[in-house]
Image (cartoon, rainbow, N blue to C red):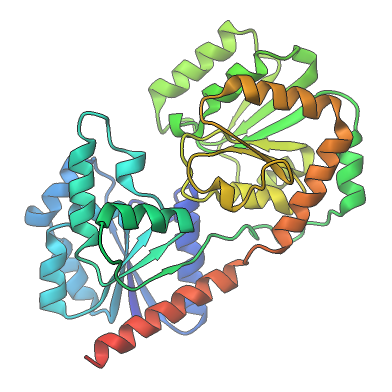
Length: 366
């Protein structure tokens, strides 16, 4: 098959969604498929809407001569009207790859209704849907308020590091190491990831009881980053909190090895690749009840789920884990066991390819 993937921005962007896209493209090409990337330049929501009328997107898709087109649903504002023309003129199936609904993640309170209308209209124009979690598919179902088109759930995998040698003994030894609790947050410094909640939580603890490292881009929400830096300064956390910027590859693997706990108190996660990555290193994870973290974290077994913004409960949990290192070790061992049951990228991408093939064959046999 000649498969197109339509995205916004750069395929090498640092986020779980773009990592998912890169893994999928690499797998499809390894199976002999031709894959063409069609990218729209990063623009705000309203300028993407204008692509439906004024842009060259239709021309670029037609020139690719595709058998099937996957659309990263981030690009939906540019397609909610245009997709009808693409489908009619090119006669190819259109598949939405939904990492996270914009009406949940991006919509400001005063225009959320408009985001939902546009996103619903877009999803009504596609012939199939790939969702990255059961939670995401449920949100899509609620948004459409009707029968779903053909769909599959293909969860992101966490096997992003080749050599990870850790066992129960290693997890116990790491947990029992004396000194402060070593906490890691892996996520771009944006409000949705909840770093402000974690800072409020550690502010409740004696400074000698913890060290917090934050690995994630610092350029995506400058106002929020400025707020975070002010919080760190005003709360006297400069010696206990490190903002590392973007960390990838083996350097990120080293951070997982060096820390004892992953905390990401997000306002919403449509899945959470870093939760699974952390489990590969035997790290317990603390996430929130909002979104799909429950699909990965078993509360009280391999980590904890807290309500979003509940820094008081989070602070209590951190203090408990600092003082009860045997509990920390048990949670870590269970996290490693949970990782073993998670699908790997080859399985996830093979499921997607099988879905694409079935949709293409059904289209051809109409």
